[in-house]
Image 1: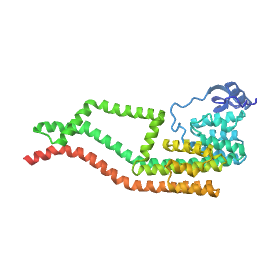
Image 2 (image 1 turned 30 degrees about the horizontal axis):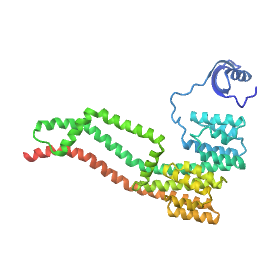
Image 3 (image 1 turned 135 degrees about the vertical axis):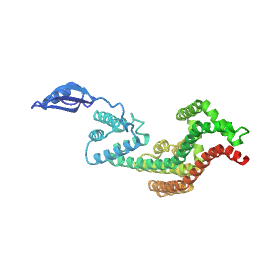
Image 4 (image 1 turned 90 degrees about the horizontal axis):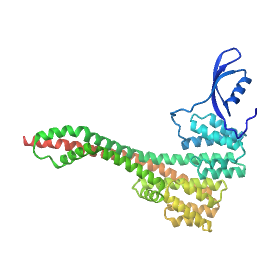
Length: 406
C-alpha cells in the first residue's frame, strides 16, 4: 500500500503478540489505524490494541524558539548539500527533535513539499517562525539552485542576530532584576515588618519623625489597598503590552525613547545597525534586488524607528538614489556606517563593506555590554542598599530619638 503524499500521517501506539506469542508494544506512523494494523500483520505481529498517540498535557520546551529554527536550518542545509531530498531532510529533522511543536511544524512542511509545493510557498504559511527575510532567501536559493548554501547563510545570519539580542538582553537584565528585588523587599517590609514596629511606636507616644511617619502611612495604605497596587501594576502591564503590540505609534514612541536612554540607548543603536548591516549583506549577497532586500531588512531590525527609516530608504533607492545618500538623510545611522556603505557602492563591494560594518558594531556591542556589566553592578548594589536602608533607618529613628531623650 503506497502512501499518498497528501495524506496526513499520525503516530499510533499499539500492543500485540509476535509469532512466538510474546507481548510487544510500539509506535507506528500511518494515515489511519487500518493501515497500521495491515503493516503490523505483514511484520508477523497480531495487534490487539491500536490508538492514536496522545499529546502530552505539559511539555518542557514545547515552545518553538528561534534557536530551534536556527539549528534545524543548519541541519537541513547540511543534508541537502549531501544530496538528501528536501522532504526527507525535513522528515529526518522532525523525527530527531524532542520538541513536539517542532515535530508538528516540520512534518507539516514535509507533507506539503511532498505534494509538490515549493518550499518558499510552504514557509509563507508559517510567518510566525519564518520571517520575510528567511522566505526571501529560500526563494532565491530555489531559483538559483543553491538552496543548501543559502540555508547555511540563513542559519549564520540568525545566529549572529540572536547573539546580538542575547547581549542586549543580558545588559538590561541585571538592573531590571535588581529593581524587582528592591520592590519585593520593600513590599515585604511594608506588610510584615513595619506593622510590628508600628505597635512599638504607638507605645512611645509623642510625634514620630517625618521619615518614619511617611513609611508608616505607606505601610497602612499598602496593607489596606494592596490589591489595588498589585492589580493596578498587573493591569497596567497587560494594557501596555496589549496596546504596544497593536499600536505602531506607541511602538515608535517607545523605541524612540529607548534609543535616547543614557548608556543603553547607544548599545541598542549599535545592535540595530549591526543587525541591519548583517541582514542586508546576506540578502544582497544572495542576489535579492536591493529594493526587495530593504523591505525584508526593515522587518528584521526589531525597532520601529529604524523600520520607518528603512522603508523611506527603500522608497528613495527605488527612484535611483544611492543607498548611502538615502541612509544619510534619515539621520539615525553613524558616520562610520555611512562612509563604509558609500565606499562599498563606489567600489562594487557593498556586501563585503556591509559585513565589515556588522563585524565592527558587533564588537562595539560586546565591549559596551562588558563595560556596562562592570559598572552597573556596584551602581545597582548601591541603589538597593539606599532603597532598603532608607526604610530600615526610618524604623529606627524613633528608637534613636527616644534614646536621646533618656
